[in-house]
Structures are given as structure tokens and as C-alpha cells.
Length: 284
Image 1 (cartoon, rainbow, N blue to C red):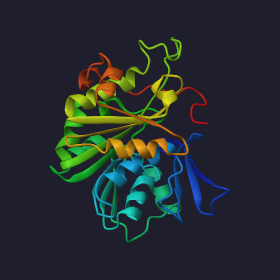
Image 2: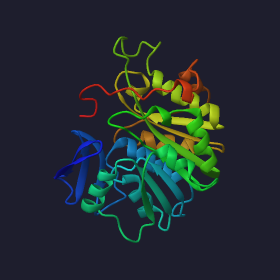
Image 3: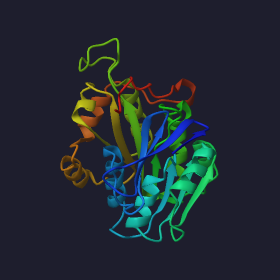
């Protein structure tokens, strides 16, 4: 089934191996996966990494206040509702026709405390009170890129304001080889990712990031999940879980992460650019 939405053409593709599993695709590119029978099942590797972060954000089962910037099929909101009952969650999605399609075809459990709001992620963030969220998850894409105004120190300053003491920020970042350079050669490789790490380090006291080793080396385009906060981060347990995933990933933190960022400057509103466009077939 499919429908035109604000961001393109959305399709819900059935999973032949799971009776009520569905992949949400926009203009042919997979965006989210939902199993209506098992909302704790996360099919995409980067979403499993975000799921690990949600698991480690508080003791098991304890309710959390979670803000999701970017809604899609509400995969992570469903996951938190299933694993942390009574959590209060808000999801912000600019594409209101996509929200209508998801609500109609992939309905939410009425007992879940998930409020879905339409509008721009940064504008919605500005309306939230101080110290509201235990976890903020940013997974915002316009087409295939993250909008420039969601990549800056000013944006992360607003995130930090909304986080409660001890709260954490997680973001899905995409980047890959620079076409004009040889993959793995360094220099301008992963300029966007390096800049996002520098930006997070300028705002938060602690930062780590998890990605496939080939992404870290700049050999392929892919996802990197960044985690930041002002308190200690669960680096050791996140490392263990990422290494044991069906698609193993590596966590970088501390000096190694600072060295990876190199001389990248924090991104400000005045100099912000969207994330790079993925090459054809990047997520096939």
C-alpha cells in the first residue's frame, strides 16, 4: 500500500517473514520498520543502537520522558512504550500526511502515552519546558538529509535546556566517503560527522558515538549514532551490545573520539549545512 505524503511517495511494504511486520519506504528508500505484534523488535541496525541507548538511559522498566524529533513510523516510541510502560513520550513529525498514514495503517496501542505533534523539530523543541526529558532522540530527515538548522550548537543548546539533570541526547547521523577523494584517505572524509561530533563536544560534557567500522573508516556511506550528556555515559555496556549485534559496530569515546574529530569546528547557525546526500543504492 502507498500514498503521496508531504515528503514524497510513502509505501508500507509487508515483511514475508513476520506476519505483521512492515517497512515504511519514502520514494523507495527504507525509513522505518514496525512489527505490530512485537514493538520491541528493531530490524534496522541503527535503530537497535538507539534501542540500546533507551535501554541504558535508566534502570530496566523505569518510565522515561522521551522526546522524539522525527517520527516516521514511530518505531522507537513504540519500543520505549513496550519496554518502559507508563513512559510519557512526545514525537514531532513535520510530514503530517505521513503521520495520518502511519496512524491509519500502523495504529498505536491506546494505552501508550505517546503524543504526536506536527511541525518543525526545532520550533517544537523551543516550546517545551526546561528539564522535561530524560532522553531526546533526533532522527530527522527531509528527503534523505538532515536539515541544516538541526545540526548546530544553538540547536543542541535547546536540547540541553529541555533535558532533565542526567538526561541524554541521541542522534542518527549519516555520512560517507567524499566522492572526490579515495575512501579511507582521511583529509576531507566524513566532514559532516566530524563536525557533528565537534558540535556535541562543544555543548555537552560527555560524548560517544557508535558506527559500523567501515563507516568510521570512510569506506561506505552509513549511519552513526551519537550519544551525549553531562553525566557519565554507559560506554562499556553500549560497546558490549554494539559488538554483539548481528551487524557489529564500534563505539568511540574520550580521546579516540576527539582525535577522530580532529580539527573540526563546532557548527553554528551561521555556517550550517544539511547532511550530505547518500549515493544511489546506499541503503539497498
